[in-house]
Image 1 (cartoon, rainbow, N blue to C red):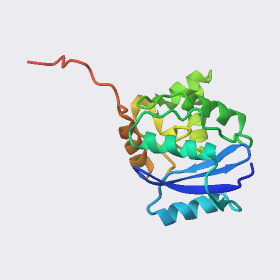
Image 2: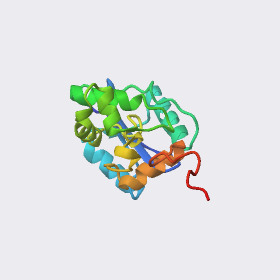
Image 3: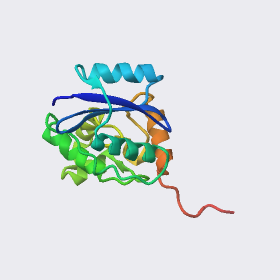
Amino acid sequence: MTTHGHILFDTAIGACGLAWGPHGITGAQLPEASEAAASTRLRRRFPGSVAMAPTPAIADAITRIQALLAGAPADLAPIELDLGPVPDFNRRVYAVARAIPPGRTLTYGEVATRLGDPLLARDVGQALGRNPFPIIVPCHRVLGAGGKLVGFSAPGGTNTKRRLLEIEGARIGPALPLFDTHAN
């Protein structure tokens, strides 16, 4: 994976970043405590990349990400990712995660089941914890068993995960009964 350029851009939740090379986006950065911290982390993750103006494909990705983070409908599926160095299992996990629409969630176990083995839930969690493309590969849409908000390696941890899900209008937590069956 060769990264040539990177850019920070404003969103409704703070400064996000993208890094890219000749085969697509090589990484995405969610906001840090400050724009300077986000810039430092982006440069550390992608040494040798240069801050530069976005290509048309990167400008389109930025527009789509900004819209999604502002709560508007936005399809991130067309954004091209450089999956060259990503292990095959992680690619499969990321493909399932990318198919989860905004406002919806799956559990780690449900992702594992879609991959053909419900016993791979922990492996799914590890793959998502290594996701270099947060938001584009929406690992925030994958929850623990019973819909529990667990594990998020991005800055802010589960608070950031909750915020992203709320922006998308997702229901967090276990489903509640439609009617109170214990009414007096």
